[in-house]
Amino acid sequence: MENINFLQTKDFFSLNALKCLRNEYLFNDCQLCFERCSYNALGIFKNKIKLFEELCTSCGACIGVCPTESLSLSTFDMSAFIFNFLEKEVNQIIEKMDIPHFGMLDSYHLISLVLRSKRNLFLQFDENNSSKDLDYIESQIKQSNLFLSSIGVEHSLFLKPHVSELQNNSRRHLFKTLVQAKNGLQQNSSVSQKLTQEQKTLPAKVTLFKNSLKLVCEDIVNTQISTQDLPLYNQKIDFQRCTNCVECITFCPTNALFQSATKESIYFQSGKCIGCNICHQVCQHNAIQEEKNLDLIAFMFDKAELLVKFEYIKCDECNNMFIHKNQGTVCDVCKDYAYNHNNMFTLAKDL
Ligand code: SF4
Ligand code: SF4
Image 1 (tube, helix red, strand yellow):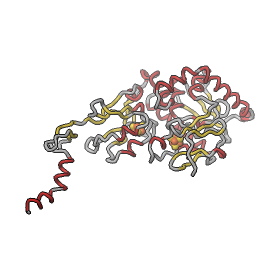
Image 2: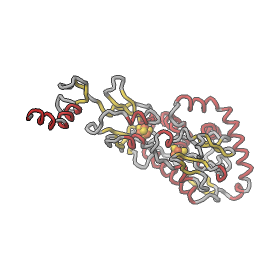
Image 3: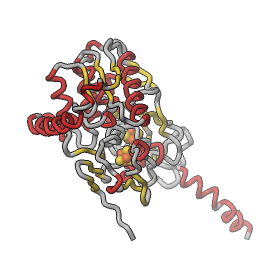
Image 4: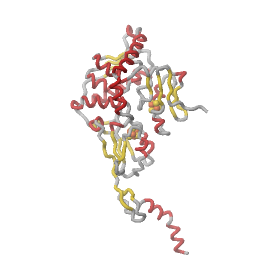
């Protein structure tokens, strides 16, 4: 029987299935990269993501959409590219010249670029791209502009096609870009390493995004925002439904959810949530739900918010500690026992 390779590569492209959400939780159904690929080079095998090397063109179109940065091009380092771009003080990014594919970007990268450059940015796409590729980058730009305007930033992103004279040289420029980016990776290795080392479990693009927000936090006019249509996530827990089983904490891939040392409370850091939905999938009581509003200050400074706090009391029957929710002083186990064995005691009395 065929086995799954956790690290699959094709030329410059690699898929690290160990970082994939499908590896975090058996029943996770993320297929964002699979949907982005125009060549059917990604598929699902034994409920895990699989690269069909013979079909992959190493274009990089699927990279930006992955919430966990499981996909990469070895020749191109995104953090190095962004910091090199900012140093150049230009306002346009040309696909296949500055970056192999706009599919490598997502709204975290785009918003960070605008916040740090403090100017309008023009993205020039390769006209040979498929409509699927164009739809993707358009949606990321729309989402980014929505976020920028919601926090009062006056600059935006614009999309326009390549000018033809540049198209002729695109292959040569792309090669130059890859080499420059690789050199940039060496030059900016301290920045890249810092981004990955500081947040072992959090994708570097989320850390970049939070750090970019911190740089302009004094200018942000609105810090209470709606998460609808934005790449931001907030969670809440219904006290009555929650049993403190901590399944959500166990499976959260970024440690956005955690328990207090005394095990009585569950806390959440919106700045670490990647919206993978695993906590919702594992909760058997439907206790964790999406919260539509978000405090941007809590997000960018990783403030932990209390989602639920339990009171433990001693059961009158068995003397064990149990979670008290105004349901009396006998635990559910003893109540169930009494209910289930009620007939037995009745029968014994009648004998
Ligand atoms: S987009 Fe990322 S997390 Fe989702 S299936 Fe693909 S590799 Fe896994
Ligand atoms: S809190 Fe839930 S949605 Fe957010 S990263 Fe953790 S498991 Fe995923």
